[in-house]
Length: 392
Ligand SMILES: *Cc1c(COP(=O)(O)O)cnc(C)c1O
Image (tube, rainbow, N blue to C red; front, side, top):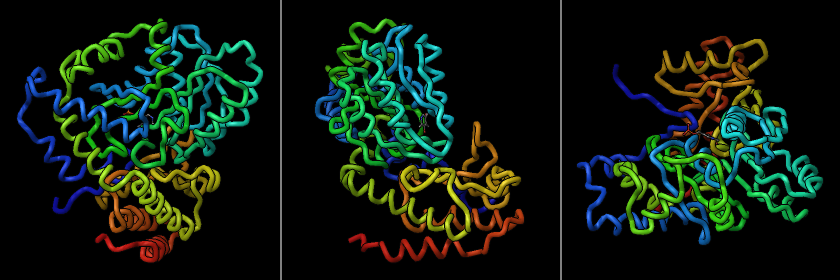
């Protein structure tokens, strides 16, 4: 089959050629004398991506899910109360992970399409005078519905009642694409993975822990072995690892961090906002809506497009893949079939982001939806054309 597949799912994302090349290396001795010259600055610079000076980064051969497990088991004990809300497949699985580790989750169910219910959280925290709640779980970007949440507002609510719980933030599909400020936002545990904003293949679970979280680690009684921070701390500080590290991915991560810092994180966030706005202009031109209920919730990394009632939105994804070699993303969980998702994060520019819009239009038209060919593309083109700047 001539031509290539076009990947526009919210992770894994497209891996830039320079990162691919950096990973295409001979296997390395993980006990090499000069390895710390590589690893120590890598950990230091990963902190810049989280925007933290006081936090500590842990990197596991894993994925985002392992990051959840690491953050949970290293700071909490079975029976601990945690406050969490469910508004999509990932916030749902985050809760599931906590429950399987024996935590007592206070679940706040929210309609899918909205995000972290800050006011409801504030109310619950205010009433928790004995501080039985040990952690507050948030999902920065709910990838299943294309919804971003206001994490600083959660910190504000916690501080307003002097609540000492740890603030957890799943930013697997937010870090290195949406604004994220670990120190300024007062996050205690940030969890990410390699295959989304960091533009790498899957294989790293990355956690950033505050000093308070590191303190909590000393008394946390959840069972842990592979994800234990103690073992990482004992070896990472010397530039080594408690078990075999995924060196190819770490070499790739080095280049990913360099690319992001060279562009500037604020420019990275602004670029993602432009890509997302272009997609939203297209959705509007199609006469459709996003699953996210309004601009305050709409994500800049993934858009879930709501298709007309009675139509299986996942047909668009299957058809686009079968006929046009375009990978869009299905809707999952409670909103399965209500639409389809376009991932627009990571290594992405103007002409790239027009591709899933073009392909989705063709697929929808093929399937008999009332979409005018070129309408979404034109709206996105006009927005991108009038907001683009010369590259040099
Ligand atoms: C992708 C994702 C995860 C899970 O990551 P895996 O790498 O698949 O384990 C968790 N949370 C969010 C918000 C995600 O987008």
